[in-house]
Length: 202
Image (cartoon, rainbow, N blue to C red; front, side, top):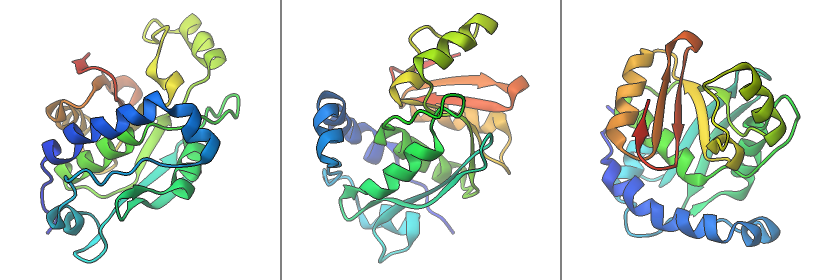
């Protein structure tokens, strides 16, 4: 049986590494270097909960509902985020309307990872929207009042998703309990919004 992960062990301390990511984004992109996550919160228990007692990695499976593209595998291994994995994640979560790609905040992947373990559902996340270009965001704002002018989708910090096999309301409640960022509930569109911004709910 999968074991629960204490989000305080992963998400709270991971903000330190994520702040480094945000403040050094240009260097991160230029050199293709991913920040280390070896900050003392990765324990044997967490490793066992993810991919087995000897693996020491974090895995996810994501599918873009618009393109059918998929990422499945480890995105973190042996104290580091995996550049090739994030290259694939960036493709899967690109703006399918403009075909633009943008770096995805590693904290977002960690939120999904912890959320999946808390729900004990290891199905594929269905991604409705990941990165959103300024052009797309402006276009959506013209046809919907629910699109923020400065959406975190435009900085690779947000994802609209569902998790087949788990009621959408339960995904929402689990995300709220993590207190790791923003959570929006859109049952009519069949997705929950999660982001790495300040803690807030709507």
